Each structure stands twice: as structure tokens, then as C-alpha cells.
Length: 171
Ligand SMILES: Nc1ncnc2c1ncn2[C@@H]1O[C@H](COP(=O)(O)OP(=O)(O)OP(=O)(O)O)[C@@H](O)[C@H]1O
Ligand SMILES: O=C(O)[C@H](O)[C@@H](O)[C@H](O)[C@H](O)CO
Image 1: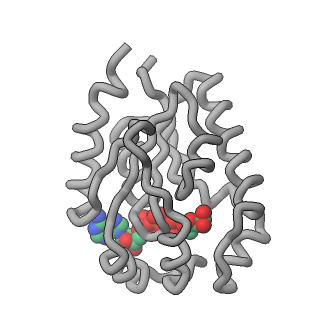
Image 2 (image 1 turned 120 degrees about the horizontal axis):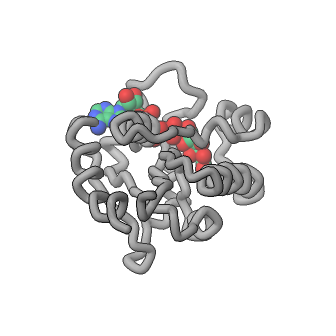
């Protein structure tokens, strides 16, 4: 069993969590889960209406993701899950010895451009500033792998697998 069996790909909306997370999971041959699928309908409707989520909106969602992570760990079924995990307290709720966070770091301008070009998604580009306002970048003691997202998805995934190598193949 790998040292870390759960990878949480985190970052603001539009940072590439779904794109990168799914590609990474496919290449590792691990399960993949999309945190957006754990939102109560009310949360999705709120974001689609242009309102950012509050902590109160996010706690039940984060608990649901934590529950899924625990199921995967118990089943020894390694997985990648994309989850914004913007605040340290959110990450603390998801943190386990088996969990490795990967932070997709990018500038507001780059991400705004990608969100504006993305179609068919409930999340509005106008909400990006609220995501950056809530974002608490991982502190050094969190031992998070940070990768910049300026390159192609291929380059970003390669940087992650290179950076994760010791974490996912060690004892
Ligand atoms: N490295 C990249 N280079 C160019 N485009 C990218 C890259 N990564 C993601 N994209 C594009 O940027 C947009 C946002 O990516 P994606 O939907 O994966 O982000 P996300 O973090 O999952 O967003 P959300 O949290 O809102 O679901 C998509 O249209 C995607 O195709
Ligand atoms: O924490 C949050 O504010 C939400 O989870 C958002 O990040 C959205 O779920 C997602 O980014 C849009 O797809």
C-alpha cells in the first residue's frame, strides 16, 4: 500500500482541479472523485445564483468528502479527489496520515481567463474574487505539494507525479 493513498487536489475554482485530478487519477490507476458531486443541491443553486458559499454551507459538504475519504482508506482503495479546501480549517477536517494535498497555484488573471472561457459549468467567473478572499494558502508545516498551473495539463501532472514520487511509493 502506498504511503499516501489519498491525494486531495485543491485550489480556487478554475485552478484546474477537475482537469488535473482526473488525469492524475487515470495515470495512477486510482479512483477519482469530484468534490462538486458532494454539494447539497442548495449549495449548487446558491453558487449558480452568484452567491459565494459560507463556512456554514461548506461544513456538511466537507464532512461528506471526509466520509468518502475514510471509506476509501478503510477499503485500501487509493483515490484522487478534487476539492477546493480553501481554508486551513477545511483542510484540517480532511487531513489524515494517508492524505496528501496538492495545491494548484495560479494568478487571479490567469484563472479568470480560464473561467471566462469555460462554458456549461454552474460556477460563475464573477465569484472568483470571493474564492481568493477565502483562500488561505497552505503553510509550510502543512507539507503540501504546491505546483504552478501556467503550463499545459500534461506539464502540471508531470510536475505532480515527480513531486509525489516519494510520497506515493514509499513505505
Ligand atoms: N493547465 C491548463 N492549461 C489550460 N487550460 C486549463 C488547464 N487546466 C485547466 N484548464 C481549463 O481551465 C478551466 C478550469 O479548469 P477546471 O474546470 O478543471 O477547474 P476546477 O478547479 O475544477 O474548477 P471548479 O472548482 O470550478 O470545478 C477548464 O476549462 C479547463 O479545461
Ligand atoms: O468551496 C467552495 O466555494 C466551492 O466548493 C467551490 O470551490 C466550488 O465547489 C467549485 O470550485 C466550483 O466548481
